[in-house]
Every structure is written in structure tokens, then in C-alpha cells.
Length: 168
Image 1 (cartoon, rainbow, N blue to C red):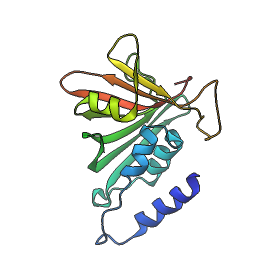
Image 2 (image 1 turned 90 degrees about the vertical axis):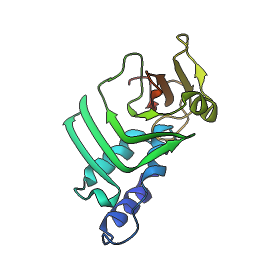
Image 3 (image 1 turned 135 degrees about the vertical axis):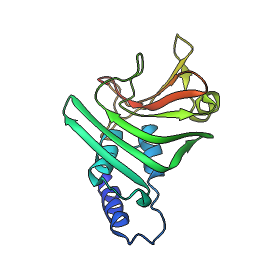
């Protein structure tokens, strides 16, 4: 499933700079909402790197295995139900308490619209929402450790949204 994405990404990066800006945002939205293997997708983009912000993004990764972080900074924001984020992070470390999204972004906007659009259910705290998928990162059915969309409300119209699974 990721091979076409990797080929397409490499093809877009190799295009001359005067071509239209490549749009990686749909793939990042799929990663944030557990529609594809989120960790692999962000890692692949980060590997491409790019010092050409004009190409649509800059990616950087560091660390290894259980201390790995990949960051994608976007020229144009990712938009989900009107909320916007200018970067996506894949991290094996947990940066937010009570948030299990391994691949996540910090959004500005109305979290209630995102909760409704994604069909998320509230957790006990009321400031955290989730939706379990029925598949694992490999896309196969998984009832034991499925990917889960997570949303945690922060302050001042900000929230973090991402995809995680039981070990992250």
C-alpha cells in the first residue's frame, strides 16, 4: 500500500521547482486519522528531507527505535473540519500526558467540529476523544491492538490530534 505513495513522493520531489507545489497533505491527513500506516508514512517523508521549502514541506528525523522523532513542517497547513496544523510529528516518546497518538499534529480551531466530523467518542475526562479502527498498522483486521484516532483538547482553541495504537 505504501509503495505507490513512496514512488509518487519521489516523483514529486524530483520535479523542477517551477512546477506546482506538491500536495502531501492528503497523505498526512490519512496518517493522522489512521487510514494508512501513520508511522511509516511520516518516516518516509522525513527521509526525503528537503531544504527546499518551496517544494511544499521540510522533513527531518533523529534518534532511533524507542527514541525516534520525525518532523514534517508544511508550507500550507493540513486542514481537518476547518482546524489547521502546519506540522506533523511522528514520535515514539509521548509528548502530551494522557495522549496516545504516535503520529500527531497540534491544531488550531474548533475541536468540536473535528470530533463530530471524525465520529470520535469522549473519554472519561471530557477533554479527550477517541475512535478505534478495526485494523492494525499493517491494514489487516486487528481486535487486540487496533489503530486509534486520538484528540486531546489543549488551551486557547488548540488541540492535538493523531493516530496511535496500544503500545504508543
